[in-house]
Length: 439
Ligand code: ARG
Image (cartoon, rainbow, N blue to C red; front, side):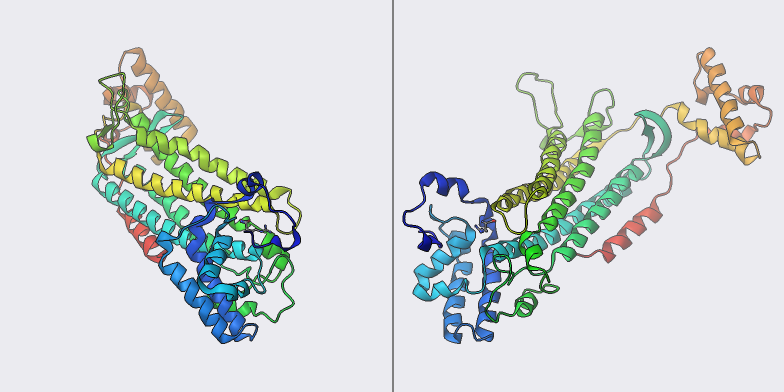
């Protein structure tokens, strides 16, 4: 039975029921009950329903909440809200019909999703915190491992593997902050906006908002039931996080190749090939990269969903939930898997190529007052001269240097003794940021 049968003579067909119903919203069960309890308390305190009625409704809702793990949905439940009301009716009888007083599923679902994402954002921020911590730990362990940096995928300068990991740690700190910002912005209450323009009953929107720990009721009821920018923002937070993970994943795939040989995948985090016995594949990294596509798609879909909707609520909005849940789950799984991949792998880095010393060499001249453009030219000539003789830059002698420019000095050959940059300050700064950003 539907909750809105009064104006119809016949029932809806199975096709209509199956097509219009939603099962993806079942994970809203607990927040739906939290919202309903706040609503019922308000109805009683404002004298709209009797205190005894409220007691019965709340006892029923609490018992559904306590047995949420074994809640049984039935085929005719149009969505999670309908299911709770149906179950409440089975438990407490006709008084269940008072639950929906002064409320519509339109404000109810907008509230539920806000409550759900408020918690999800916290969980994600906490998870990213762990991710940053593991990157920092990895960076500490690889702070002395010299690697080349790349621009255009050509060796450029030198840094440490630790510094490379810290780059991802900084990205993750911003991702974490974005989830927290998003949670703060979505924390306002649409409840009481009703179907679109509130209720004629003396409900208190202030009271439910306060009971739910929200900043306040959303002033405009059309905005409250019709807007989903908070969903778009949340999905974007997921997409940007995935894009960061995907860039690292891409590097890990490259590093695991025979040609690079930087990354040795442990058995626990490797996959094999059904055809090629010798293979050890970085499937975790590839799937993080691959699933990023889906989350970028979720973002596009949530935005597209809204772009042509007349105010206020339209059923199209039912589709936002599966998208945002998919995005959130994907981030959660990807962080976990990538963390495991890094923990279960080793790194062996060959010496960076000699060319990475070219800029430091030019800067020796710059330090003596030579204009940079001229110093660039001089080192370029040196590289060509050495190349002509079949030698690399680090094979240069002081005579080679003096032959191209007599402003070079004997100590300039020091540039070939590369060492990793110090990253302690960054590590302390990251740790300080984490303590500010406790979600
Ligand atoms: N399941 C619906 C959704 O997620 C709840 C709101 C239904 N409202 C309505 N007017 N049919 O959007």
